[in-house]
Image 1: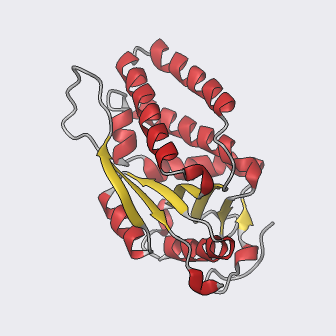
Image 2: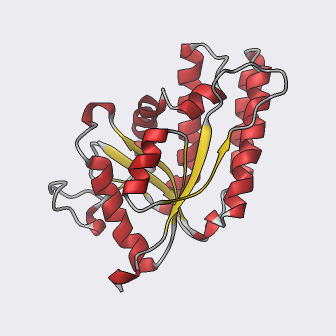
Length: 228
């Protein structure tokens, strides 16, 4: 539920929990936020703008479907000016549900003639899985998405939302794990106490010629013991 209070004095318990009926609106906001993200531009390199926007939206919906039932997708209120989507510690990525999503996505891509895109996505999925396991991300709060509505950027909302979440992470003494594809965002997270675990270029398909292969920065934030 949401509460009528200002962003400045909102408490952790007063964050709005995103629900299933919000999924369409939130997925649209996230799609608009990440249209120019290097990860999506690389993943859907061959696609027309219309097709790229469509498949980014579908992926955002797919991500939400994985997370929505754990009550860890939050915003300040139902205006969704800033959104955090998390998978809580101890919860495995639902491989059966994701496999169904991947099958549906693959069929749509292949029907449109995007075979190389489909092959690239499969390699990218394996790539993220390797480091997710290596860094024991299942033991963390996995911050899959932190987005700000395009009309409300440069207002410090992402910092405020993160700081509210940090109180919870610290209280539970849990790490927070992220994967970052944007250099500016890496600096943002470093300023908020995250540490770099490693950096790796996304995998590519043999024979393809994409000039700029994005680098993924794997990061985590350790809980602050001073809160105990």
